[in-house]
Length: 213
Image (cartoon, rainbow, N blue to C red):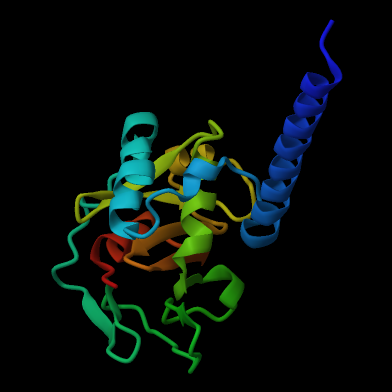
């Protein structure tokens, strides 16, 4: 029969482990809005390497590429925001409306559209906190959901669907009539490119293949 000292040590050790587990659960839930193992934070001091190893390589191995380099954008116009450090190309028969917003730039791109809900809207959000997004993205892609990605400068970036609709059906049918989102990481920042409304497949591919942060 175990003596009281051994039982006490076991009880203390068990209590410490439970406390640490609960504390970690509360910490990740508070700071990252989800739970993931502690090793998900290892390597975040080098965000580019962390992304390549834990997200890009995982997408390539377990996901499916959506090719975006088969659209001719040589005659497209270029939009550049020197203030915020990004640019992309768009078709010559489209216009851009650019509200002055320090956090998001919204582009309504159909020139002759009357009802904006029938047009194509592109929203670029940039400069977010990588410390929050990278572990959360790694956790999301590890859950076994259908994974689609695009190649941009030899790095894989995930295609997301904020409305939790069947993204695979949209990809295969080439129907982008709802919200589709791309998450681009660059150093200590993350940037979103979101397509909403009735965006053509060529618009989707052309913008993504030419966007630069």
